[in-house]
Image (cartoon, rainbow, N blue to C red; front, side, top):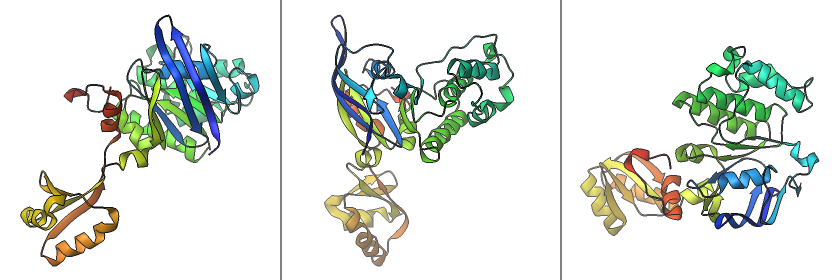
Length: 303
């Protein structure tokens, strides 16, 4: 895999605080890559270094094959870090036109296209002072994309959005990677959304990388076959030590290779199977396990 971002021994200190602590990370070109971690894990610090907004204390960071701050590489990037702020007296269309001129792409920026892409066509000529947080996020994403970058870094792109807005942003991010060939690097506390949209993730804790890999590989750990079948007692009897009750269903601790034979054997024993699906660890449980964060019942998909 060709790396679009590489860090080696990347360290950033603020007095006695180590925001990044010798971070080694390689983010491949293409797809959607999630950077996860509790507050203070170093995510925003990493992004600011990659964008040339702050300098590392030690170590090296390379973006698009070149050093951070190389103009030729920076022009191939887009970003939205935290909640964007724009002049309140401007309309959404004026904001993008102004930013396009600042970027030197005033004549080539397809502003109507990007307003439509983020779902702001109907609000294009409204002053941004009346925008909700979610609408400001949409406008910030449009601003990050209108130069048609090869790499875009998005920090909490769904912050302040309602469920339909989150779903639309998820579709946009996947479309950027799949249809436009853009490498998307994002940070989010919405772990369920990360699991749905990302191809790979890195989990940071206290400035260090604690886990990295494809979402499918990480969530396949501890995979079991969940059977909605009955009578449940007959299924449990057939499975013995490999079976456990999961509400009205049964979890079978078998491999994928053993699954078809197990289902055939249960059917031959008179078991009615209504549903059979593989379930593994979700990204949320992996996150809390790796970071040691405390999961509160009311924040099931957030940190």
